[in-house]
Length: 266
Length: 209
Image 1: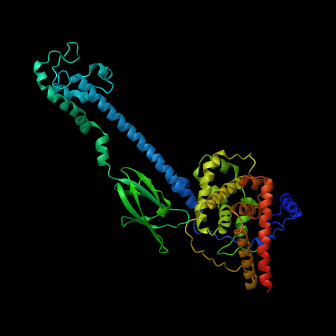
Image 2 (image 1 turned 90 degrees about the vertical axis):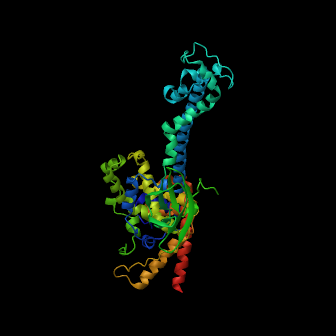
Image 3 (image 1 turned 120 degrees about the vertical axis):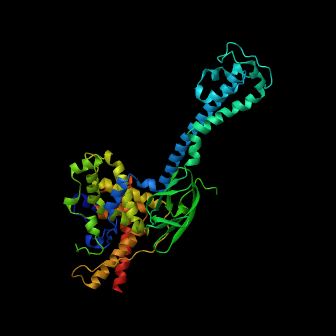
């Protein structure tokens, strides 16, 4: 006897029994295996997560990993950006060096960062315009873009010029490069903290300071290494350490044993 | 069928819902597929009982009932991710489709190593109205026997049995849900029945002593 009465479905079971399968217990008996009602309002919980736009996979271990990957990807692009700016600054400095070396005048050095665009023509001509060694008498061709009427005493300053020229990009970076100060100024990282499947809500302490009960969506900490403690109401607790970088957002799940910390030095 | 107890039950209330509450109305489904909040909420309300009962039964055997709520939630999130691709004209009813997703979510989870073991929470059922204590006790013993029998099965066999016995899926639907052939479904159901028979026999013999 099946728990449901649909003839077609019952036929399937009868066929199985005809083939020798043991009979299924009757409906009353099957109903003896009861299911407790959920302890919480499942619909509310599901909807909270759906509406928060936080898929389950994002709070799972795999999700955390993929988030890390995405973050690393983001850092990758940031690094590419920094590298491009650095390369531009280098090209800028070299081009200016090549351009200014024959005359080696301080005013030229000062105007380099703002006057010359990154893809300035001198950069592409650079190989044919390599400067002579310091101290070598310089003969500035009259056809140079720089004013040919510069006084000859510039030649006397030749030994100083390489140093002055090399400083130019650095000075520019210190005052105008948006990346350099940003690294020093960003002092916070963000943590999302939750507990893994099968673990109830836990009290969370970061470096011994209580920050709340999981799930916690927005905990700000300084970059660096920290300890996190998850404490459950049954007296159990887990303590682990993690590293977080400047501006990074990390998802931590208790217990941390399950979390691979790609930034950990261990 | 006996009246479900207030504190706990509800096996059949979950497993064998009334026809009127079996499927989401078409317009509500369409709205849920468009991502409308009220409709998604309605979907969860309509199917949460069945999904919860299924997930609970599949996890009970593994002693991982503490994961039920997380997995129900996980299952619904998977449902919402895939919902735009569900077609009413397709081979599966919405309920079957949702139960299939929930089943796969649980099987995926059961294939992974479990978290720390927590002591089982024992929920004392209230006596159903007018039920004699000895009858109640026997029912509980039978319930435990079924649970023990199901616990002895692999997640895949367990899933086939629970989907068939408590959720009315036919063999083809089970095959689709578990992504196996019809023969495999029959074989799994056979094994489940054999395990069930064995455990129940033990309980009956114990009761006669």
